[in-house]
Image 1 (cartoon, rainbow, N blue to C red):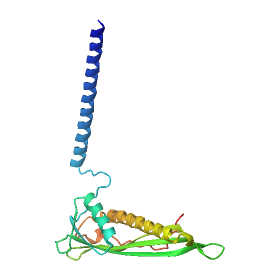
Image 2 (cartoon, one colour):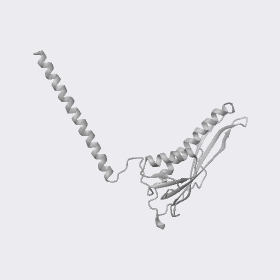
Image 3 (cartoon, one colour):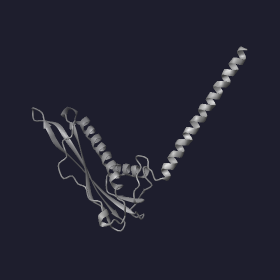
Image 4 (cartoon, helix red, strand yellow):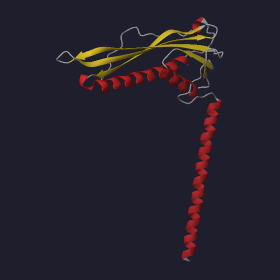
Length: 205
């Protein structure tokens, strides 16, 4: 009798396991179907861009920054990065700038805080020379304390902050490129240039 009870419980547990497995499979298939339906309707997941140009060439920019830009564009859209000689639909011109200024001095007149400044200059033209985005600027800043006692460590910190700003600028640039909706825009569709009209606010430490 005891054996039958045990076998009955085992059967019940097995049935429950199969039922749960069936529910899990149905849930997965439902989610998959929903994702496919959204994709078919043109819905894009966060982080995806739909650039009007499908072949983009890049001129200028530091190799590290350009490499990140290529990864972001190609990994988040159906646009590919090509050489200027490989018939691009659009050409992105890049230029970078770095600088620093003193934020504060200690009681001995020695620099205590620096402001690091990074700028990414860019413009976008079509293959036929049409201006898609006129010369524009993405400007960023970061604050950093300074100590002559740890000059090497502070230089390494500055390099990391510049790299962080560079990555931030690339992310902003990809979003601005997505604003272009036509390779032959009408006057009312032209994308305006963007450039800071006032000094950047003092960055918090």
